Length: 443
Image (tube, rainbow, N blue to C red):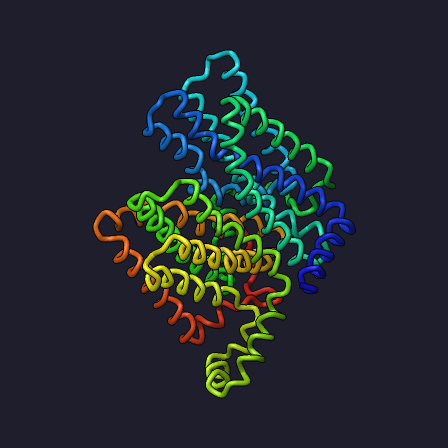
């Protein structure tokens, strides 16, 4: 309890002592709320215009496909122009696009192709903001406060996911134009708040060719032992977790589970994510306490010494891998009961929030002229798994029963967890280093 109070006090001091961080955090949070809200209202508006479920899919595809195409180019653009500048103009441009959408609705001239174009362009601009905020936040505080700042920001990400989706549905219920008017206000407000930050000091101006810049980001990440391993592990975990969600939704549909209850169960991952993110600054302290207590038992002490677990105080990625293995196994052991899925998703969210802060802290140590490009490559890896996971899981569910699909997913993660634990070089690669881990790359 005292630790929680102390952590809240640290967050308050951070917001008070660093005005630049406070502005970037507020602007980013407003932007995230707009992104989560509009992600719900695009498909609702598409159905209102066409009454066709097919077009819901196309509009959702238009808003999400930029994540597969634009993360890496966005990183190169941000490293050239600076995260603040790119984020400010991206937010203003998003506001203009949604305002035009509102005008088309007000004058009853909105057509489906207008909505698809706006969703595609606005989704692309949201990628700019997503990469830019990750590069921007660490520059607004002293190095010793970076992890705490990222923890607070990561908690906001999960909080806006929880708040934005129901808010979008509620506003749409008041009228199709209402959520888009709210989004216009959010995006312009975010741009205004962020514009009050000092000009970028990380932008290096024109460079060489764009493709060479993008390649430099890929090479930098690949040469960074921890980020390379963390990106691969995160992508694989995301793939499996998306499979877990598809299995749950399939079973919930077959069993006639109320949609409201299904939504609450899915929200458990967000709640866990908030808790994990806010807990992350104290992760090492908690891990050492667990190790000390476990070491009092002879067999546990032997295992801790054999696998070097006492030295893994920074290996949140290893803990996340084992938590995912346990979370995927739990529904198998307890008859796939809905509350069990909630516990599994909350546990995954908890360690997911912790591991995200760990990865973002490592990204903040990348050379400043490369950080956005490396962030873009890292995000592409994790986002691709999120995008492809439901599709692959749906194909699997179409061929086997949910129980068999879940068994296959859990065994896959269990094997991965065993491999990264038992192989020393893989185990050590999941421990972030305090200093640089790679040779600087020139573009």
